[in-house]
Amino acid sequence: MAASDHVDFATFMEGVNRRNPHQPEFVQAVQEVAEDIFDFIADKEEYHSQQILRRIAEPDRVVSFRVCWEDDNGNIRVQRGWRVQNNNAIGPYKGGIRFHPSVNESVLKFLAFEQTFKNALTGLPMGGGKGGSNFNPKGKSVREIMRFCQSFMTELFRHIGPDVDVPAGDIGVGGREIGFMFGQYKRITNHFNGVLTGKGLEYGGSLIRTEATGYGAVYFLENMLKHRGMDLHGKKAVISGSGNVATHAAEKIVQLGGKVLTLSDSGGFIHDPDGISQEKIDWVKAHKTHRRGRIEEYVEAYPAATFHAGKTPWGVPCDVALPCATQNELLGADARMLVENGCIAVSEGANMPSDLDAVHHFKAAKIMFAPGKAANAGGVAVSGLEMSQNSARRSWKEDELQAMLKDIMDGIHGRCIAYGDQGDGYVDYVKGANIAGFKKVADAMLAFGVV
Ligand SMILES: NC(=O)C1=CN([C@@H]2O[C@H](COP(=O)(O)OP(=O)(O)OC[C@H]3O[C@@H](n4cnc5c(N)ncnc54)[C@H](O)[C@@H]3O)[C@@H](O)[C@H]2O)C=CC1
Ligand SMILES: O=C(O)CCC(=O)C(=O)O
Image (cartoon, rainbow, N blue to C red; front, top):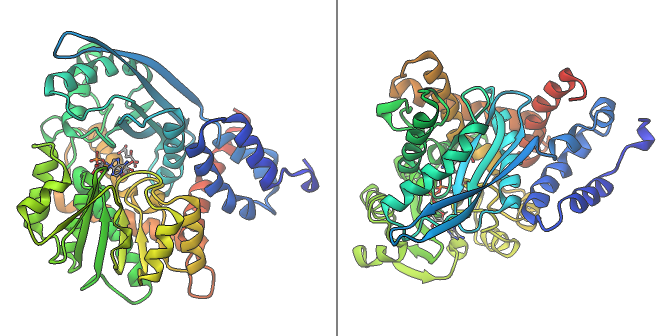
């Protein structure tokens, strides 16, 4: 294709929209990447002629299946399950499984697409995938969760494998669910291998996998601040979510001398002006993981705090913000409010929590803004380390893994600077992450020819 025949950004996006009707999350994720990639490849003929971005934005395959299970009252329930295998140019498909009523093909395609770039950024050999179901774990008994997980794996097992596709947890899927799924995989296949990550320590799991995403998001934040000669000491942090990522991000902020003011769930947010200490974080972890309670009950345990029903925490003045709940939970108006209130840095613990308007505003305001594909990559990175440990049939020590996680987060920060430094002191981390992730996957694809 001659340079003049190159498809331009608008035509490319028109095609993405046309081919993916009613999939707004997927189109949004592709647009955020394409905005940067089109500039980068403007003078790189091969990426155009080999249609690399067009190919990455078309999943290798989307498997959709029926998941039948029986509830405690003997009723037969039917859910839909999916595995989206987006791209395996640099390694086996890798990415979590989400159980939430909002899960649909668009959400999983966006997550698998993002995962492709994120996994490339870690420097480890992992392709991008994601799966899940519209099953709602809320209010279900442990036996119901177990029956659902077993039924889900009864179909999923034929599409995955330690060198094929290695799922893990995500929203609604933690250690308990991974245990039920691994048990069923082993029963069906008679194989004990590293087909899932986030496993229990007794059966092949890795130390610090549970903490890695939240800790990693704070390490990335720390790196951004350090790059500008600052640190987290005394900084006020606003965090959304109260699950795995949010509570471990809060824990690391507290360890590094910051003050955490908020946590949230789909019912609203709590604001604790005294700061959410380690003891309070432990209470939230137990409340969410064992008692499966709501965040509003925090104010009964800690009366100095207030609960704000149906609201997000972005109006609380802060120095740094970490959206750690779900996609599109931080909108353009929230971004404006954060910047006006003096927020200097945002590190995305969740996947695509900021909508496009918010991302554009953060970039225009030139605050430090780390997109999820860079900031929350610590989780999948330690999953990659779990895969290595499983292959070698050994377990590394905690301090070795902590050092590796830190090193990987430093590496991602460095890659973002390499492609995102604007030369005037401002680093466009979105651009840096998109280009660094794209380049690795694209160059592998070029090596394979047209496949
Ligand atoms: N668990 C992991 O290792 C990784 C998770 N992530 C992302 O981090 C985010 C959180 O995941 P986890 O903490 O693992 O899940 P989780 O299931 O432990 O917690 C999810 C949290 O988000 C909240 N939430 C869900 N939907 C919400 C909504 N509509 N409005 C407000 N709050 C809502 C829940 O109440 C809960 O506090 C997701 O975007 C996930 O994709 C990203 C990288 C790795
Ligand atoms: O550890 C993994 O493989 C999954 C992590 C994940 O789902 C994510 O990075 O969004």
